[in-house]
Image (cartoon, rainbow, N blue to C red):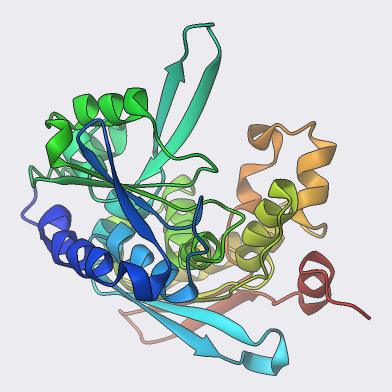
Length: 324
């Protein structure tokens, strides 16, 4: 495997600081079947700072997330800025919610949890880890789950078994999409969304040298579909990313043209509307829509930069429920 930093080892001190500041961050910890669970918005309010810290944990301690007041052009009064010196490891191999954990209860009802965080590199349940040549045996295994419910014993057991650890060596951080912590850590995925799209386009991700992203933090909503729509729109219509890449200038130009969300035929409607029109089937929505609104790609070989896409302020206001 390629020698890269251990995302699990780098995340652990951040987890300990998160837990130590639980009261200030309006979060709590609890024991579930021996596993340590951090509730960042299910039965507690959570906070923007909790979401910021959780985003850095999800990136395996290889990224920096900053909450900012104000946005360019006055689009929205709060945003996150994200930077990663090892963007592929931080974003694709740690932050990306790539492990689809399917569980079935005693009545045969199935549900799937999308699991992110540095523990994925220990579980290695995705072909991505073989493709990019990465594994991380760090313990405890740390996962971030977007869910409206706290994990029960069955979820804790499945995560522990998947990662090859005892429940006592498992940390599960839960951030509901309807919570402020959840919305902050989702907005902080703007760079990860860009890199995932780069990978889908077939551009060699190992040629991405550095990455920086920015996205507004949307207002919370108690309605899941509304909150989920806003969290996506913050990136699809408000997110900006700058990538520096190695290789020919022409390929950097082509990547910039293909990368933004405006390249999708589904571009132009708030995500919640698209989701409802698709009958609630997330996977029926065109995959090329899942990209930042605006991108800048710099070809390191020549120093030239190429831009594509735009910030759709009107769509953001509509999605975020801004009163006229």
